[in-house]
Image (cartoon, rainbow, N blue to C red; front, side, top):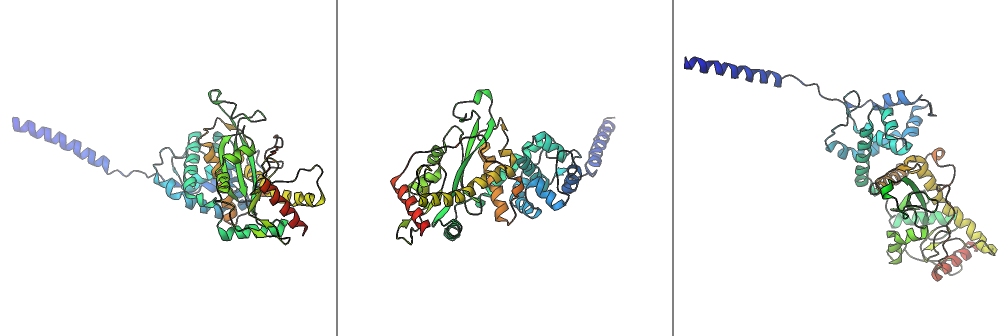
Length: 392
């Protein structure tokens, strides 16, 4: 009887094994990646109440994402490897399909462009709030690494083009750009509030300093410091200031004006900045002579490039123009950087900045003018030499 019992046990085991084998060969329906995201998004949102969307589909695409389809494809190519190399846990839509790289990029761009809540952005794509949050941050991390070449100080040839344009357009020889700064407002938890982050208008904010070229491209930025700082103090805390003071930036060849005066490389800035050997500001308007008034007019026209660049930046990427709800102060500089990179990518790709989305008022609306009284003697000499060069 013993052998018979053994045989019975083997049969039971065989049945179990066969059952497992049968289960293992049953084909599992693979999750498909959602590639038709634009058609469903356009159908759902092009006629949604509250949106004034162009009827042309190509223009509608730019309306929602600020970039053309060609530039969108380029951005996808930059981050594709990073977005597909990580486990896409949770990155599925309500139909259970994996989000394509294109849809992930679209979600992130829409979040940055609209400044709408994660719930609202998620609803427009058929995904949840947590997915919007995860996708946006993954996109930001990838862009920080893959797109940083779109924001850099110009090389020699590029700088020569910039200086040539400033001289031909405004009569300002050897000018390398325009500088300005703006506040990015935020709401902080009560445990994190401090006087440092509270600015002169009693808002909690973070500062962004930027230098732009003649095409309103950002060529240097500084962010991450509290909005309670003055623009002049922000400048002195920046790497740009240290490089200029050490002779490592704005250190190109000085030129000789028609009047025989030496004019070094410099940038133009408003009254909120100190007058330095490499940063020129306007003459104070009280009791100025004609030659100084003429300089102020040309200087202001050039400086407005930076003002317009910030208005375009905060108007295109509305997340920067809305009050950030309890942002991580370590993450917020990354968000600001990515918006500046996207601004530059539009220019570098030959795409067009949309003037209709720029802020209609000043980019720092509600903030009073700042004045810095610091005057470096070499800065005064540079400004006088520029005023005389304009007269000639």
